[in-house]
Amino acid sequence: MALALQLRPHFPPLVSAPIPTARRCDLFSSPLGFAGTRGLGRMLPLSSPALRSFSARLDLSFSSSSATEAPVDGWGEGDPVTLVEFVGKGAGDDLALLFSHLQYASKRIAAVVASPFNAELGRRGKAPAGSASSGRDAPKPLDVVANEIILSSLRKSRKVAVMASEEDDAPIWIDDHGPFVMVTDPLDGSRNIDASIPTGTIFGIYKRLEELDHLPTEEKASLNSLQSGIHLVAAGYVLYSSATIFCISFGSGTHAFTLDHSTGEFVLTHPFIEVPRRGQIYSVNDARYFDWPEGLRQYIDTVRQGKGQFPKKYSARYICSLVADFHRTLMYGGIVMNPRNHLRLVYEANPLSYLMENAGGKGSDGKLKILSIQPVQLHQRLPLFLGSAEDMEELESYDHIQQKINPGYEV
Ligand SMILES: O=P(O)(O)OC[C@H]1O[C@](O)(COP(=O)(O)O)[C@@H](O)[C@@H]1O
Image (cartoon, rainbow, N blue to C red; front, top):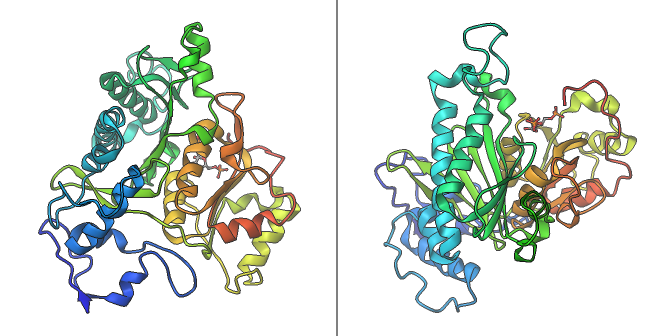
């Protein structure tokens, strides 16, 4: 039996042929034991039988209600599931409201990043000193603009007590009654913007620790923001690339939505992403090879010759934009890594580990599970390794994969 795809007119005909039933099994597992969602996104939201079965899983993911309880109530037959509907369906009113502001903020950032009129703002401090565009009236760099867009969306939501951002030295207290704490890297990879290379927003959401409410603002702002990753209630990223992708997890599955420019809505394209258990790609800045510790060199030498546990030669892919490298790893498997003390635990490592683990992968600093690390400083940096479960286990079996020296790199 074939599953014919019902493409809505505004979707490009990416998949137009009937998909054999056997192929549908690939959506969650493959004969090699890999699980993957390649191509899945273009199918599930567009065909009603698949949507129905997805909706059943969706209801399960958010509540303990039985899958047999009319799971499709409220979903239009064959209609794409939007991000707003998805979150509104089961995440609770507070989170739903917060996400409606966040997705709006991300569309504004996507527009700003893509605008021809903002191209020159990509780099911090680009305007030459003394020029008309330097000084107080100088246009703001895009990462600062992105930060302001997010802050303003959180203020409007009235659902966030404190925002800690990679862009700010200290967390910003927003609302005494906001139930959530938000940590964010508003525009990661912004150093690539001049070349139109993908960038991304990363965020994590915790509950406000009410037991700290009596403390002075500065202190409670900082302690709320220093929660360890196991306490995340949601995390996500937005990838600004050939498509704008909003990927989220609430602790049960990782799901990605793609911005449909014809309606302005994010629609569910990759429900329940399962990172392949084994990939064939490693992603690292390997110009640093001679500064790597022996274990990491051995691992990379081994897999690129096809002499590792998986007997195929690995490929290298490195965009140098964490969200883009992470998204590809989530889709195709393998490992994305930065072995030096560079990426930030609070704003980058924790949210991305949460998303990776909820997709069946792993996140580590080369010794410890990222989500188990208690942050002690807001801007603390660490080595970061994220990816397919089997690749990560193989990598960690090599001793000494953390790069201890950091010579002469622009931080
Ligand atoms: O210079 P390296 O070690 O390759 O690091 C590149 C990484 O740094 C980042 O640009 C983040 O750095 P910033 O937080 O300083 O912007 C990532 O997007 C990228 O993966």
